[in-house]
Every structure is written in C-alpha cells, then in structure tokens.
Length: 67
Image 1 (cartoon, rainbow, N blue to C red):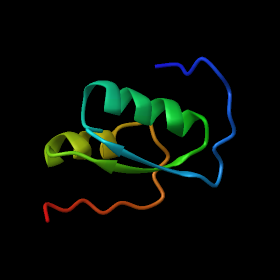
Image 2 (image 1 turned 180 degrees about the vertical axis):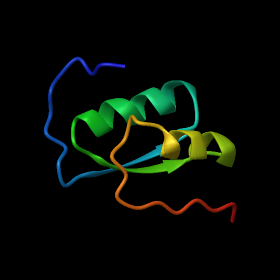
Image 3 (image 1 turned 60 degrees about the horizontal axis):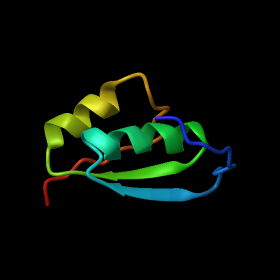
C-alpha cells in the first residue's frame, strides 16, 4: 500500500489493530516506510511472528504476548 501523500512520521507512534493481515498489515508497511514506530495488535500470534521475522521492518524491540 502506498500512501497518496508523503508525511514525516519520525518520532510518532502508530497503533494498528488487525495488523496480521489485510488492510492492517499493509497500513503497517506504509506507515513504517514513512518513519513511524509501530505497535501491532492482532489475534493471530503466528502471523505477527511472520511479520516480525520478515524483512519488511527494521525491528528495534519486540514483545509478543497472548495475554
């Protein structure tokens, strides 16, 4: 997903629900490319681990929990 505008999101935090697939996942990629730090929320931990282990994000720290 490409945002129709450029905006500097460095130093900003985006909280995205439904981040393991579909629109939430694509929005995560788009906001990360704009420099945002992300908090990704989803029901499917296995899918979040796939995102974490992928090459799309530069990950500084992670915590995946089912609580």
